[in-house]
Image 1 (spheres, rainbow, N blue to C red):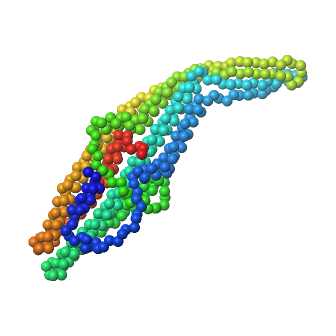
Image 2 (image 1 turned 180 degrees about the vertical axis):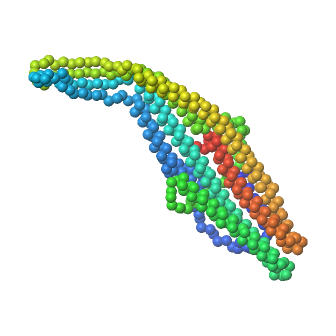
Length: 422
């Protein structure tokens, strides 16, 4: 059943017969107000959040890593006076071009490591988007709770005014004491204090949303309109399987493991010598020397570099083992998160059902019976006030559970890897 419809059903039960319409008076048409849906908020957060824009810039930067790591070093040009005699009768000029050439496989191994930086940046961007969307959902439902609670509390104020009017009527005809009238008026003012708290909660939720959008100045966000609806829960085992396939943290961990393994291959390839080819041309600037040229190939002698490459290989192997253990712990953590989120959703569903079907209707009937008994002089004001306040508390509790259900269901969706994209 749609929770909004159920909520209206609960409201319709409250004081239909208590002449509330006479207290409210004739309502004038309300001016149209701006609205805010959850989908529009999430779209705006993704397009404007500085945090996400920063991650996207980092992702674009990571796309250049593989090209940088796989590029050859620049060739070297050397111009020198070669074996110049002291008499200066002859001045041979030597021009040399030298191009370093890494051992086959070195550049591809370096590029393989750097290429995973791009995939890692993409996964980190998905994680940042997930965190932002979850924070936006949380703030949205806090804003929804504040708005709906303010509406309910305003109705509760009118309800308490009905009680005060009943006491005042009895007091005027000498059937109630002044202390009873003062107690009823005090109960009205106590309810007013809740309005201050709810207004603060609304402003705090709006501030959190504006912070996610990167805004510093306040502006109206509109009335939230996305009411959560009940949906059947899949089995816990199905949700855990979805989480193991869809959580971006696991994808990031897999990328890190592949990168660690690629670093092992890179460290092993660094043991190979470095090569270079060169060509030189000599022409005399003075004298009658012949023009000559020289070609050659060079290679380094792997010696001291072997210590560095061996240490790099051991480091990469240790990192690979670290990532493997982190994956095991991450899988256990995600399983616990899904179970906890599942239990929270199921619990809130039971609370909502209990309030909608039992507690609010019972409290409503208790208030009507207490008011009728008070007007006939069979019961005292204390019972009427206690039953009325209990009904007000039940209605506000229902609103809290309604907003909590939307949040907890969103947390469950995010815990299995859903909700990361519109």
